Length: 234
Picture 1 (cartoon, rainbow, N blue to C red):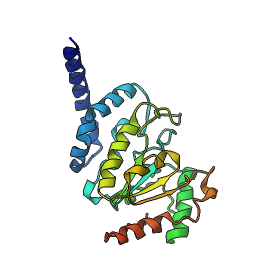
Picture 2: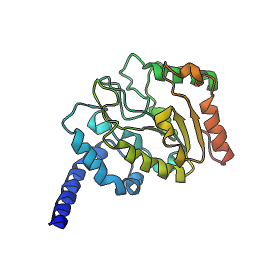
Picture 3: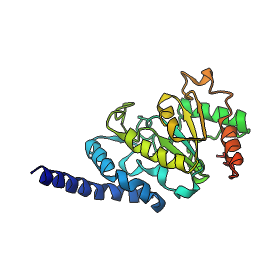
Picture 4: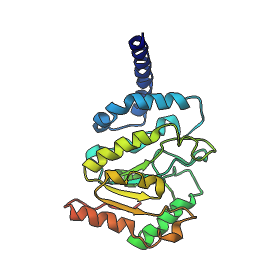
């Protein structure tokens, strides 16, 4: 009886995963990630079923947008907390906002300020960080969804198990991790090459984020490995 119930549950999860895969495909998740996702597919299906009736941030078809480029191209990962809860602000890339968003969130403005001080790059007028994704930077939130209008709404549903798994794979590939704040630093154990510091939020940016030169540090670690540095231009 227990075995039959277990089989039914597994079949249900597989069924849900087929729908989840449609969303993954529609968000252009690169095929190179398939073997990474395979062990966690049932868990992803379970999580998506929990939140299926909610107004999500980001939208369902953007949850896995961070994985749109070839896994082999990833040289750096920047880890955020959870997506922006303001409707229309989250786009599936940590810290990034769509070009249509006129008011850039303060944490991202602080990142742009440090980018200018560190790399001499003029702050862009848009909060869209897609260029970093294309340059080999995975913009990964620790928790991949929240409820619109509510920060940290999905902190306790299990996304950390997903991002633990992804971080473990990235660490094996000697990806350089940028871990700002406590939630991101939970992933520190998976990385040999890492930069840890305070979060760029208004509450903590002046406690060590400004002046930390994280972009230069990333490139120094990459060059030390004999790898190409990141082009941080936006």
